[in-house]
Length: 452
Image 1 (cartoon, rainbow, N blue to C red):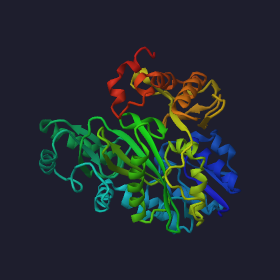
Image 2: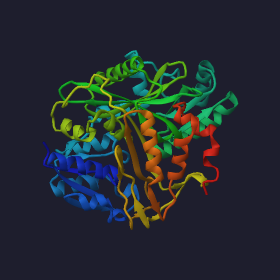
Image 3: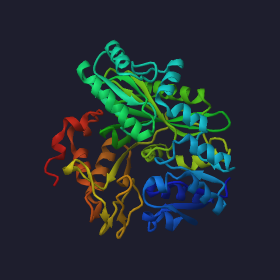
Image 4: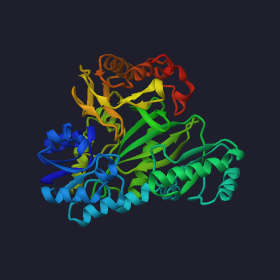
């Protein structure tokens, strides 16, 4: 096992990794920007190093500073968390070249699965269903027009080198295609440094289903069932649950087997998530793989009673998987709501500032992953995630009731948050019935009315 792990991240995920390390008896190093000097991950780590000014490029994205911090403090491993450098193959390579263990997959695995077009080709070779689309990246508008006409409109143009909803545009008609293609290329270049895009058939009302994968260095790969992440805004997930209300045991086995097949084909090591679109007729299609721990990993932990972050660390240290799950070891139902410092009534405008009061919810089956406290100043430089409220119940109905109660009793004052909006979603008849898809919020604009 490692002696000291540096966490190349901030916020709640940095605290999550610190807790896992403490349970394993491993010391931790926090890195922080000047804006995060008073953050809890700095307080609770055994050691800490300031790595630069607030903008990400000067601190949390500065590979040289992070590796120097690891060397100075004697860290023998680096955990990247999610976001920032978590899926950066160059970072993983430089960590390994510095004789430090990268807690995650190999640089080659990050590269192969991080490029959506390459991952899609691999899925097709393995017989994993993919949405009809271009065989690879498309360079020119004319080439894209021809492929789109063959697939049939509407089509979606996606950045080949990234995710998070950036570099994605829908063209409903041939007339819209040229502008959508150009905008997607420009956004992809700005966000990921690569303007490569590819095309897919656009599904009108799909569900977003993802499978949690874990692999070790001894050739074992398992999946820990699915999460349903269909409640989204502009391709950003807001609410996740496990298991999915739309997935039965037969579909769970089929989609899980497809995910394991993909991961096994590259000898995948560590935690990863393979994402699918589930169509209304029950057909599922591979979308992409995230080669890191996910924001929404707690719902899987609650339903499997399994610590994914501790397992990540164990596997990176060369230990075999502590157990191999068959795909049906589920316990009850879990739901997660992401609480952001945003104003839903103002098009989810960020709301940084001083938190003047903070009181988290509690009670049986309620978990809050957060880095905030009364007196904490939410900086304007980073993602607006304040907390994740996760509840577990013996049934989905019990989990829903717990989440409603948890949101109603969650007090955060001083900044505007998405808590009232999330409470409305929990009470919407379609959400309560499990009848949602990725376009749910677009169809329900009244959820945003009268929130001011």
